[in-house]
Length: 346
Image 1 (cartoon, rainbow, N blue to C red):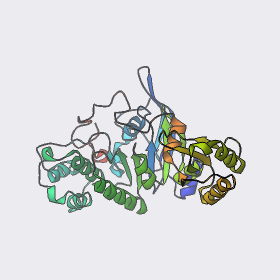
Image 2 (cartoon, rainbow, N blue to C red; image 1 turned 120 degrees about the horizontal axis):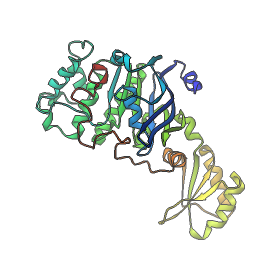
Image 3 (cartoon, rainbow, N blue to C red; image 1 turned 135 degrees about the horizontal axis):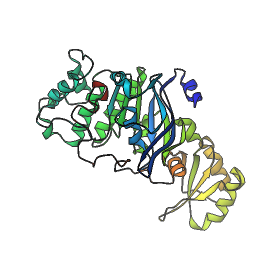
């Protein structure tokens, strides 16, 4: 795991070793080891029930682990170290606000609970998340996406070194997702660490530098995204049904035995061959020599394929992943909690 930090060249922002959390007979975390480098966007992926939200609640001291240790920003972190959460901004589960206060008034209330907030910081954050014009409206009139954006603004109030975001794209429209992505990338470029739990694999593919995949409470793969995807490099080719046998033989002669499989697509015949995408032309030539002409050829690496291979589950996540989580649409924590470092953690 240390090699990840070495590759980043600037140490670890989060380190967990042997993290265990049980809810009765249910094991939510089973010896979780994470290594999150400083100054990157880290994509935390896993199917429903894998332990993602449990992990983030432990990292913000909302719950305690049964075993294991946590380091935040290079130092051991425990329940007595809550003031260190001033350096950590978080949005975990549903953002909770006072519904009859405005967006700006909610941010003022949150700012008053933690480290001193510079004058003008609230308006700056409202501008960043695109809520400046609606800042005076009651939060009860906000859409789900607007509340999500306000939660991100709350998490950024203290200018944290580490940002923890649980499904930050929930409720955002396409333009909002693009704006959020640009903001998070800028934060990482400025040296901050952004830890994002998400089930939107396409978004993680565009956003993350490093990915950790969790299944059944254990880390099953972690590393730079481009390195992980290189193991999934494939060339996919669409052919006529009558050419299936010849095409398979030609591709396995090129790429090796058991390198080719038919994809599950009832509308067309697609073959996938494990082969360097940069050599897709060689695949086309091998098929042509065998008298097979591709109707379509695609090259690349798929995060979804890697996810399914490692977890054996669907990438869709729509419900809380630990038994203590509150139902969707209810306040997960008291008002102010979206910004854990500001003292809102209960």
